[in-house]
Structure formats: C-alpha cells, structure tokens
Length: 501
Image (cartoon, rainbow, N blue to C red; front, side):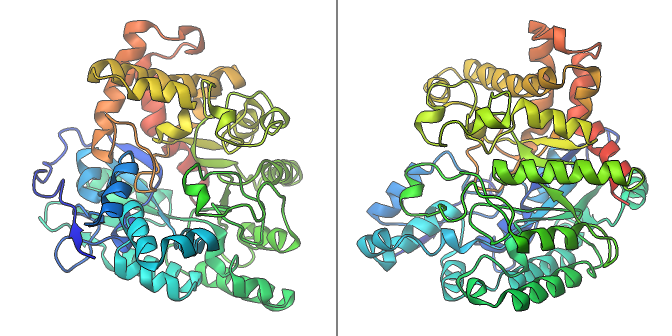
C-alpha cells in the first residue's frame, strides 16, 4: 500500500507575527500538542511542537473511504505552538496520553474479517498514528514507558521556535507562570497534565494477571516516579475510554467505531479497591506534590463516589481544599445523575435531544458540585459532545457559512447557560474556562477548528450575546465582554493562583 503525507497547513500558513496586545491572552486547560507531535508523521525528519504535523493517508479504496468517513476530524495539528501564538493561547495544559490499546487491538471478528493491512489502513488514516507507530503499539503496551518518553520529548524540546521569534517553557507553579507571562510576551507556557491513569501500568492483559499486591506496588512506585519529575503533572484525567482496573468509564465511542473498538469491560462501574489506593496515592502530599483528579470520562457511579469523597475531605480538612475538575466538558441536559443514566447511552438516546444526552456529559447536579467545591470545567470544542444528532445534522447541512456559524455559537452559548442556570447565582460565572481537546481526535466545529481560531471565537461570542441579548437574565450583571474574558482567561488564572502551588 502507498503512504502519502497530507499537506494542508504548513505550506499555506505564514508564521504568525508577535501578538499586538501581549496582555490579552487565553488559557486552554486540555489539549494534546505533545501527543500529536509524538504520534503523527512530522514535517521533514524532526518531530517538533511548532509546525503543522499531518496524518498519513493510505492511497487505496478503503483508505480514501476511511478518510472521507472521518472528515469531521482534523487531519493536521490543531494545537501546535504556532497555532497557539496566532490564537493568543499563552497558557497550555498539555495532556500526555499513551494510546490505549483498545484503539489498536480491535474486536476479533472485525480484525479477522478486514485483515491486517486493512486494519492498518483504517487506523493510520483516521487516528493520526503513523504506520510505524501503529506497528510499534501492536507489539506491546508498556504505558508507563510511553508516558515517560512523551514527557522527555516535551522537556527536551523546550526553547526557541524554528523561526526563532518565540519559545515555549514548562512552568512548575503559579508564581513562575505569572512572572514569565509578564516578562516573556513571546513565550508559550506549558502546564503538564495526563489523560488516563492507565499510564501507571494498569488496564492491560498482563496487569490483569499480575497478583494484586505486586500490581499495587508497581503502581505505587510509578506514581512516586512521576511525582519526582521536575514538572509534576497538575492533574490527571483518571479514567479514559477503556477499562483501567481502577474505576468505571462512561460511554464515549459512537457507531460505527464501536463495531471494532470494545469499551464494554468496566463500562459504568465504580471504583475498585486498587482504584481507591491509586486515588489516595495521587492526592497524597506525603509522597510528593499532590496530583489533582480530573473527573472527565469517569462513569456516573465513579463520579458520584469521588464527589462525595472530596466533599468529606474538604469538610474534614478545610485548610487542605481539593477542587473538582472536569477539563473538557459539555452538558447533557439532565437535572440529576439519576436522570442521566435512566436510559443506556446509545445513538437513539441523543437522537432528538438539544444536547448530547450521554452520561459522559455534565448534569445540573454535577455542575453545582463543581461550583461548590471551588472547581473548574473546561468547555470542549467538539460539536458532537455539545449537540443531539438531529440538531447537529440540521446545522451541518446548511450551505450558508455565516448562518451555520451563528447556530454553532448558539449551541456553545446554550451549553454555557445550562451551567449558569443550574447554579443560578453570579458566582456560576467563576467555574467555566476553555478545555478545547484540540488534537484529541474530536469532531471540531467547522468554523473554529484549531487554536488559531480562538480570538475569532471570543469576538463572535461577544457579538452574538450583545446583538441578541441572548439569555440576558443569566448574565448576573456581567457584560458579554466580561463573561467571555472570564471564560477565555480569568477563571483559569484564578484557579491556578489558588491551586497550582
């Protein structure tokens, strides 16, 4: 089969100029620039975090079909650091993610039916993995080694951009971040995070066969190693798409992908004994710096347990407060956790709803819990996580670009205002920020498809709210400019000041 590299952006996108107003910057608390650079075919022979990396395409009938079927997913890097410069995103939470093998080792029947080459074709074309990387991942699943390799890559490449006008640096705490933002206007500031606690060496075929005490010690040692990094992760998204032996995950994989990827094991279950041990090791300050927990992707049962766990901790230790985090989120339109799980998460459940009704998303009850904990929720830039199927199809069918843009803006605002109405007080505006999930293989909004679009998105949201006085009863005295400044910058910086010690 013939591998071709997809060229879209590097040749046509000029290197960005220095931002005119260095005080006006944005914060994204969940995206994947390192993962993207690590997994995909880069420009030239050297991987880097700056230039536009592109997916390989396989020039066969199946390859072209796969490319077309996944056309709503970006085939090039959305959060590379040149895009961050253009998008004024000067604080980037970089989520390190070793690829879960549930995306590599597929269900037996589809794999036998399609054959090895066709499986490679589908994976390479749709996922962003290079063919070489895919074949390496098929050979093993040493998640902890892969985590360390991604971290080393991120650390090693700190410094000047290829054009020598900008640079990036990893920051260790809020004080360092604040000083550097003031003194280094051309620097991208990176805060390390992780997606999926499988990274510590669990959730594999071999780890499930490992004696409990032996596995427990391995995870303890690996967590201790990460806490000895120079740049300890600020938080970790505890669950992800597949069973990690620690806690249940929520449904995330839609059709037709769920025909080949099996996430049923552990789906919607709660915490295990091993999971509670890992949770305490991460939150402990006796073994190093605390790593906070991000509840995104946890099952409802797991989220409920964790919310109660944190509530009890905060009551018992009021001077050692732990906030709730949901780093890349949208709402499901339900009032309570109970209501969100009355029906199984399926295509039909979200077919005619205004919002994506899966239990993965946030109910009013959970929004209140995040608020009351002094927590934060990042707004994901995935239209499929924001909307019901029928509504999204009706928007996608529109030919008029401006008309489509207005409806996407309304959809984003509707998700925001569900948060606000759920809490129903002025301080509701303190918990929302950006968690784009760019380069997380999302179905991006057509007109806001990469980090460089964020200034336009902010401007358009302000104009939409101002022109329409949209849901002004929920503004609580803020102007549209003030509300969006909180969402794009202020809330995240306040959260960091309180918690990034």
